Image 1: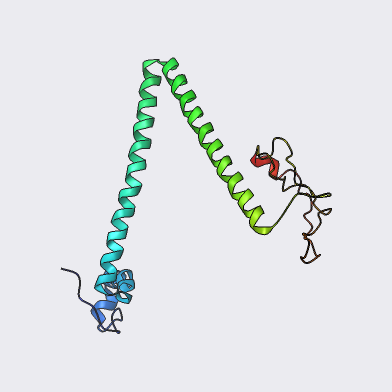
Image 2: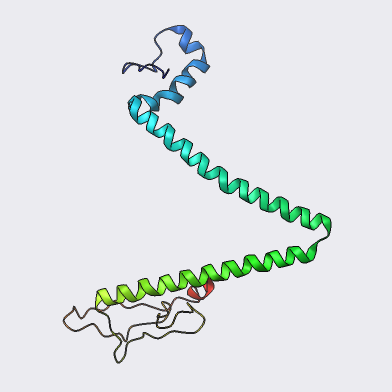
Amino acid sequence: MPPKRRSANAGRATCPSEEDNPASSTTTSNQSWKLKFNDRQLERKRQADRITQRRMREPSKQTAAAFKEKLELLMDGNHKALVERTLAENEDLVAKVKTFQAKFEQIYLASKECLGLDEGPGRVDTLVSGVTGLPGVPDPCLTSSGLEAPSGSNQDVPVVEQRSNLCRTFA
């Protein structure tokens, strides 16, 4: 049965015995946040907390199992299997990176189309090799003060100044 709601004066000491007993006042202050919610809201919060806990437990179990398996391979001296497994994981990660790069390129091209940007003379819109790995994606670290504003737009083009090698550290 859920705890009963208290009045607005709940949590205030009303007798000397409550003031002398710090445990009861701590309990009251720790539960005072619950007074702001009705029973339905508290039940929804409990349910959401249970779901979150369940979602967090699964990856933790999988990670623990993977580490246990790697440890067993190391202890058995089966280094070849461990290297093969690491290479397979690496291939999976490379595939994920390529997928994300393709999605990024689609987003970039769609946003470019929506904004009406086109490649014209003086526009810095070419790829600097090794930065993003995507054809046609400009290097955000380049100075683009020579950009021309699209026709019919405000001629105040923002100037992007070169920033050390910050972008290249994420490549």
